[in-house]
Image (cartoon, rainbow, N blue to C red; front, side, top):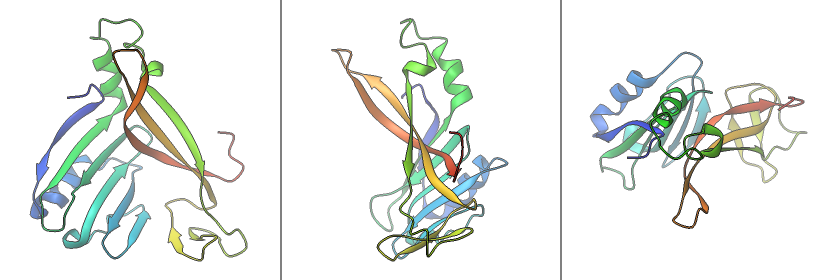
Length: 171
């Protein structure tokens, strides 16, 4: 198991909501991909029968639940950066024991047609629409978790959503 993963497992469709509720923290957001729709907001809005992927995230942690096929069990993993930082204290390699050498944060501009979007509702330049958990969002912030191969070359082994940034944010 990777040091950044605090817990992981497999759950059936009937257990998805209970595992989601277990890891929901205050100030969380939800990203859910279903076979027929996409949702991103501050409430659990899940049709488990059609669910493909669910991410419940905050600045500090993320629960990811996903499956490959409808009707199959879900795989889940939970990342908590405080727990990861604690686990790194047990790593003998000085370079690999530092959090800043094991993560890489990125900020990506969202696809937004500013003339047709406002508030929490957004329209893409291609005409699609979506909502986000904050008003006036401009970017999404992603945290990548790094491993290193035998030659010392960094490889992204996982990523999680940290949050969204508003227009004009200093970040």
